[in-house]
Structures are given as C-alpha cells and as structure tokens.
Image 1: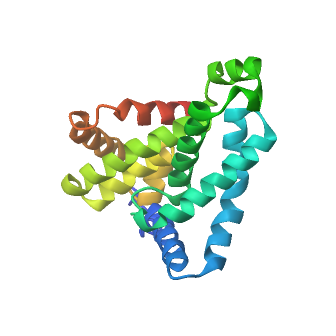
Image 2 (image 1 turned 30 degrees about the vertical axis):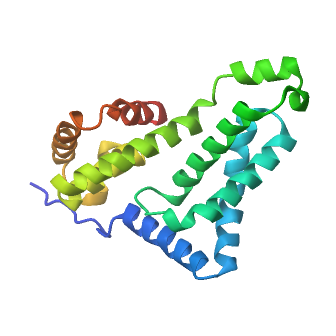
Length: 208
C-alpha cells in the first residue's frame, strides 16, 4: 500500500489567514492607518458589490459601503478572529443594508422603487456566505471544546471553504475515508448544538 503523503504545510491555511487578519486589526488598533487602508482597498470592491445587489442604486451602494467601513473601524476592538475579517465585514454590511431598508424614506427612492427593493430577493451567493459564516463561528466554538485541531481544520476546509473531500485529503495527508469519518463525527457533535448547521451544508452544496 502506498504510504500517505504528508501535507507540505500542516500549519492550517485558515489559521494563518486568521492570524494575518488579527495582525491587521492589531496594527489598526495601534494607530497604523496604513493597515486600515489595506483592509479598505482589499475589501471595498466586494462590499460595494454586496450593497449594490441589495439596494440596486450605485449612489446608495457607495454611501452604504462607506458606512460599512465606518462601522467596521469603530467595531474593530470587538473583533475576536473566530471568523475571517472579510466574513465579519460582510456581516456589518448586511446590518447596514438592513437598517437602510427599515429607515429609508420613500422620497429617497420613490414609492414604486421602495416596494420593488423591499420585495427583491437577497442575492443568494454572498448572503449565504454571511449566514454560513455566523453558523461556522458557533461550530468553531463547539468543536474547539470537543475535537482535536486536525478535525477542526478538516471541518472548516469542507464547510468553511467548500473544498472537495479529495482536496482536503491531499492537503491534510489523510485518506478520503478518514476525512469522511472525521466530518461525520464532527457533524454528530454539532447536530444537537447547532440547529442551523443545515445552512453550512446548503452553502457547501450550492458552492460546489
């Protein structure tokens, strides 16, 4: 039987990404404005796309995106790094857009446009990612108390980053079956504690 190839880097890609996020946040909190400019430049196009798909108006989307980054800057002290900074930023953008729809006046968009925007379904791809990110935060908390880091990594690669079983097996240096067993056991741990786990599973299914 051919021996399993060890992963070239077992230092958990997601963990290194989160470490980079935490470093950026720490630099901002220490007064490094270039760090926040880096966050802004990297995330602005995607956050703008998110708000534009919600409100359907470029000028409003621009304002809401700017408001998102204002709120992001103010709330960075509470960032704990359990999810990626980008997912966290999308969550803020989601809240900013929700407040806009609750409080915008009809003279701003017109009665007909307001009805259309209120009834317009949320653009699914990014919205699912935001919802799944929140669920993954809870999953991470529970798995950190009951599963080894290697199993946490496998779970996040599958449901946080939508990697295939084969790709995960190659990355972590395990067989496909070992990865499947790890995922089944992690799902069993989460089944009773995270009722919204289906959100993550659906997210993977629609991203595959």
